[in-house]
Structures are given as structure tokens and as C-alpha cells.
Length: 407
Image 1 (tube, rainbow, N blue to C red):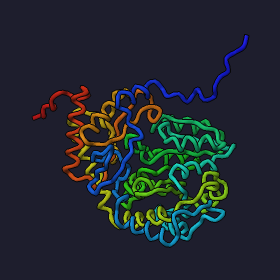
Image 2 (cartoon, rainbow, N blue to C red):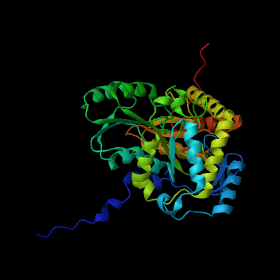
Image 3 (tube, rainbow, N blue to C red):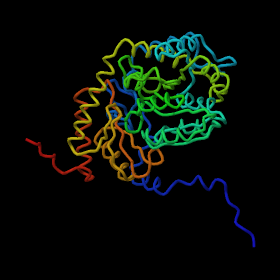
Image 4 (cartoon, rainbow, N blue to C red):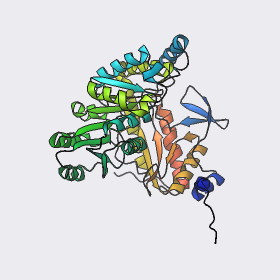
């Protein structure tokens, strides 16, 4: 009796929940933006809506200085390098940016790559067979991919659980290298990594501490150097990665650390070796952004104050926004379909947000992610809160009336 042959593409059928979301008009992904307006609004399907789903925390992606730097670089160097860094794709512009980033982050050296995802994948070159790698369970997919590409033995510890991490460090043989991998700011809900505890454990157990600063470098700390500076442990971080697609307002990424480590990554990280290098426009824009980050601390002060205000407004309405302090403001919903319905209701109110559902977040933790930027006016923050109030009430996520004020 013959068996039915399995089609390898059978896995490509859309999931039932995605089909339902698309059919019901609540699917929150791949909505194209046709125009960016000057007042934090974008045009989607012919309608202007307030952008509240961006990672452009410092509002630099539309800054005239970045545009001018990018345009000048294109005029001098063209639109692309058409080659990898080791072959023909290294620009003097790359090397200048690397030097400035290393100095800024108080590291010996830096390597600029084409995306933040690649910066994290490049870390795989540091994960050798004799190593044991400990990662927070909440880290970004790019860090998990780096761990899987590397050859180290992988252990994941509960989110921000230093007690569990220490028990696993203690159980590691002394003849094996130890690496701790986490994030400065977890992008889904804006919470910070417990870098103080992790830095203490790294020092105590001879481990190396690697921090992904994608969402916090440029935003946190007295000098904008990220969560590690904010928490007073910048000198304890051995290697730091970052992306240019959040606070730097453009595309690209970098790895910074000791010169010997960065040289090793430069020569052995396949994600960097075999990819076309960062285009001139993005490199110049990132360099301009770094100058603004150093010179204009009021931008991060403004966005952090705006985030505090919005969190307070949403919490006062009855939403669960977690305990974060950053411009990534979550509205915890739980069920994916309800989360997507809330996303659609907010869009109907003229506010574009982000919806995070599994596998981007664990089961049962779907959330709306609001991205506050330094360009959001007080009136726009009120507009976001009002849209959330109307949408939340329609869906029964918050009380039908505002909670009474305690005398």
C-alpha cells in the first residue's frame, strides 16, 4: 500500500488564527506607509494617522542634519558599496564612525555592520565549544540565533532572575569559559535588564558580560551610553552591541569591546564577513546622530518625561503598563486576537501602534506596544491616551467609567 508523499511546502499554509485576523480586518502587520508627514504622522491607506509604533525614540530619522549628512555621502560615495567589508566595502567613513563609537562607549574598538540583527549574529564568533553561554529568557530573537549559530553550551535563565543564574554559574566546571548574554532594555515592554546583579555575578564567577544595547544606547544614562551607564555598571560590560535603527534614526549596527575581541569578530563572524557593508548614507547619518546624542541630552530628557506621562495616564485609566521607565510603553492584553482587535480599534481612532503576539512574546502575554518619541507633543500624548481609553472601553479592557480619584 503506497503512502501519500509529504509536500515540503505544506508548512507554508497560513495559520488559522492569521487567516481569521486577516479576514476580520484586524491583522496588524505589513501595512504600508506611503508618506511621512512633518508632525509625527504617516499616511496609511490614504489616511493620516499619528505614528505611535516607532522605535525612533529621539526623533532623528527625519532630522534635517541626518538627511544632509546622508545626501552628502551619496553625492561623494554613491548609494552602496557593493561588497563586503574585507574585500572592497570598507570606507574611511566606517572607520571614523567605529572610532567615535568606541570612544563614546568607553571601549577599545568597534565594528560597524549593516544591521543591528547582524551585530548580534556576529557575537556567535565568541561562543566556542568549551564555553557555556547563559542568556536571559527574554532576549531578542537575534541573540537566540547567535547562540544557536555559536558552538557554546546554551543555558537560559528566567527573565532577570539573578538567583537562578548564579546557581547555574556555580554548577559550571571551572575549566569552561562563561558568558552572560542579556539586553540593556528589553524591547517588547521597555523593562531594563538587571545589569547590576549580572555585573556582580560576572565578576564573582569569572564570566564575560555581553549586553545588547539596541534600545537603550543613546537613550539612557547621563551621557546616553545606555542602560549600563544608567545603572552604574558601564565599566563591567565586556562587549556591547547596538543598532542604528532606534536612537540613531537610520540603519546599521555595531559591536564594541576590547580590541582583541573586536578583531576576532571582524575576522571570524560570518554575518559580518559575508554581507555587503553599510551604505555611505546610513554610515554618515549614524555619525551625525552620534554627534546629536552627545550634544543634545534634552532629547532623551524630553522622551523619558513624555513616556512617564503617558504611562501614568494609561495606568490611571486601568491599563497594565508594567513597571518600565522607557519610551516603549506596553498595554498588556494577554490574548492575541483581543490584542489585534485593540490594535485595529486604535488605528480607527487615528493612532498607529505595534501589536506583539506569540511567538514575538510568550503565550498569554500579547501586548500593544506604544513607541513614544521626542517629537510627540503634549497634545499628541493626550491624543494617544484618549484613543486608548475609547478603544479599551469598547473592548471591555478597562472600566466603562474613569476610576474615582482617591481623596
